[in-house]
Image (cartoon, rainbow, N blue to C red; front, side):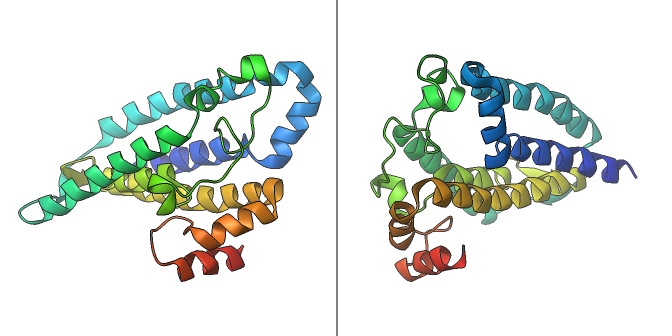
Length: 209
């Protein structure tokens, strides 16, 4: 029963985190708040962090016996996943405007474009030639490699977060298509959505949305 409640709270956090940036919600809030909407990204990030902290403490307190450990040759895979996650995070940070991501740039310039970069252009340089969403992919890799061993609670939370990230990627794709149209469709044909497969896979991603 404790696992069910924990899973429910994590699903609730993920759902609220996604709902607050759904296009219909942000569009309504932008009209309602007018000039005050420039504080929204800052509020969104603050709310996400402040509600995440008690969840993390609850999860850590419920961790029990380890049921899976990265041992032997599997440690090599874990290290590769951690290094890859770091590469995707670093590559994404070089493209994304961190001031926009944190919500600071909006205080002066208003609402940013969805790319959270200084220019609304699509680039295939660096990790963006491998995946359209390097931070989502990096987060997935990190979730499953950050711990040397996983308890039942860890596996539960990791699964919930993984599903959330995959769903979030598809939702992000829909928003980007709605805002950038053909320009984003061309980008879809060049680069895979999440996993760095072939160009054909990228084209299939674009047709599936």
